[in-house]
Amino acid sequence: MSSTTLAPTAFAALSFDQKLDRLAEVAVRVGLGIEPGQTPAQELFLTSPIDALPLARLIAAHAYKAGVKLVTTIFSDDASTLARYQHATDESFDYAPTWFYDGVAAAFKSGAARMAIAGANPALLAGQDPDKVSRANVAVSKAYKPALEFITRHDINWTIVAAATPAWAELVFPHDPPNVAIGKLWDAIFFCSRITGDDYLADWKQHNANLRTRVEFLNNKRYHSLRFFTPDNATDLTVGLADNHLWAGGGTTAGNGIYCNANIPTEECFTTPHKSRVNGHVSASKPLSHQGTLIENIRCEFKDGKIIKATATAGDAALNKLISADEGARQLGEVALVPNPSPIAQSGILFWNTLFDENAASHIALGQAYSTCLIDGDKLTREQLAALGANESLIHVDWMIGGPTMSVDGLSADGTAEPLMRNGDWV
Image (cartoon, rainbow, N blue to C red; front, side, top):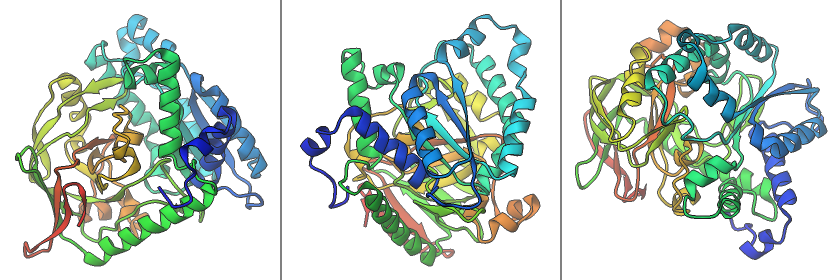
């Protein structure tokens, strides 16, 4: 944390409503980068779990104060989602409301900003048929793809922020009473989202500046590939980097000219791998919660960019359904470096939520690449992006491979290795 961070007792003296209001303000002003007087005025499309209603209302208030002309909020409900898997006809799971996702794409095309509040039960669908879960996810991914391209190209300002919910808190703190568990989860969210400082908006500016320094270092190095390895040989993976790759991290200027932070919190420096130049084996360092299914102890083998074998001790069927979503689902679309001393890692909490867990450890992502992580990538055609090694897929799923024993080398084209990380931290 930055030097302006409040002592725990000082932050604790604030009321919960004051803390929540800070998070809402950071979501709008830091996450979306919307400031009072910004022109032209934007719309905001917001999605939220119904349990996060208080935060959603505060976000709407801060958005309107900053000049947003309309906030449209869609709420989700875990119980209603689960009812589908328990009672819907089989054909339901191959259907997605294209009319809705076409509307989302139209909103993004007209310049609307996008925010999602994360907080759904990570284990909601753990006991459901993995085939139905996979089919439903594929149907949504196909319908959502035109809208998602505005996100992957970073044409618009968008962000994700988290809210503690009862089911999520119970999974993270299973041995605590419900009221204690949700209080602990809120405290962790506030801390990791960097709102505990006396001047929390300035703290975010400094944090972004620190990440930019690291990104510039990596971009100047122009590594050909990265090698991840651990002393116990659980991981020995070489990830080739896409031709003309660019590292990114922290805030980014979207295609509409607005400087925003896509994730609240964020600790990563990330770039685009080459989809055909990944070889070796890798073990996950944290479980993955994907679309309500828990997948634990993932281990994958890669050859020439593709997963040739994938196993998990829990959620194995869901994992193999995931990597069968389409041709690009077995290849990587992102590689990210996160130091083990990051606040999220040092919290010692397994969040069962990718927004947090991916910022606690170096990670890779299966599926779609971000075109913004290539030089002039936003101006290239799909064919040109593919020629540089950028992967294309309906999915984009991050999972964690880093930790306190991970080492990372940057490799030049001739194979010369330079140490980047040792024992999970920057050299």
